[in-house]
Image 1 (cartoon, rainbow, N blue to C red):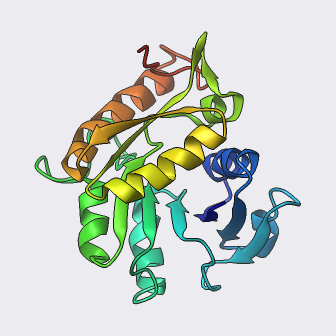
Image 2 (cartoon, helix red, strand yellow):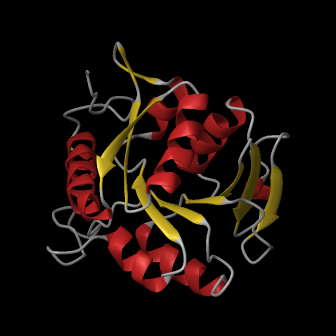
Length: 204
């Protein structure tokens, strides 16, 4: 069993909590407001600023909010596995990413917390496909990028324990490509080319 802390209690946070609980893991959910963290009676609810109990910390937040939370926990995240699921879109235009072309949101966060093991994952999945465990007739696949093999294996075990597939997508450098894929999927859904319950599937 792994203890997982999820920061954020929206649709993505709730979906990730469900996956972790299905695999028998301990789950803590932290939100800005305590009542929003109470997404499931099986989770330990709290507010941002409370002590993080998880060895794996999933940031289920909009891209602009993550840096502030990392600052809140400065010096407390060393050795932890941090999972970034953000897609750093320019939401004013919905037509570009707001990080440099040779970087990624995950790389920025990794630079901010060099003592942690940062992974990029879940950003190419909609909450609905994480909750149902399927994309059409295919099992939902979570792509995981990161530089620490043990960290990736730990998070993959959480995903697979929840009934989904997990695939190692390479080093953290691949976060840029994952964010581009997430960007494309979001624009397709926003343009009503696909539904918010659809998405890309990986067929092995």
